[in-house]
Image (cartoon, rainbow, N blue to C red; front, side, top):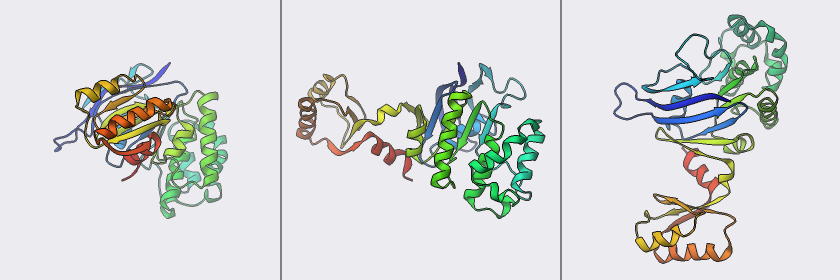
Length: 293
């Protein structure tokens, strides 16, 4: 069942002559974990904030369980959201969690407080106030609030920041377990591609507000960055003969399991036209495009 559907979503901020988010279109189903990857300023936060209703889109629609999120109150009741800080810095972590549950009338989740704080590594700091915390500890406080009610959908921005390796491992394990046992769906933004690869069913890549999609299996490809787009008719015909090859603009993708003869022929025809700028694995190419600032 489709839990979240985004249709032709766009956001243009007042005073800008460009869209920070343009024609975003995707679905997320029950129990699916989707990674959102992009450089700073690419539109990640804009997309997340539109879904969280902290910003209103300029165009398009967002549906939760087939209902428009602006069709009524309480549409995000089953969401756990970690984007901007939602805690009070002047009261303790423990008091923050209790207050959050009281405000949302979900006191039945008080029993989750200790396990969630242990998960994010804040149990020993439960009586401390976030105003005295490092950035990483503030992130973990926000993460605890997002997880405390075992929501049906998690919207997480950089959830691994501030966690030590054991904390990251534990969080990955519980998110995977929730996706299966609780059918929790997730949209997770992160610069840490390795964690997302271990966790996600597929990815949304965003650059200059435009989204493209890929499955983790797509990472098992060879990416050839070209010096210039392919426009030569003969070269186009030669490459088009291989159904497994895809190319657009200055990027050509080749499956890693292409046979030796075909692989050599592809590189030969590209080299003869002096087309090759660099050769990377798809994963390294994505790291270069979407992770480096």
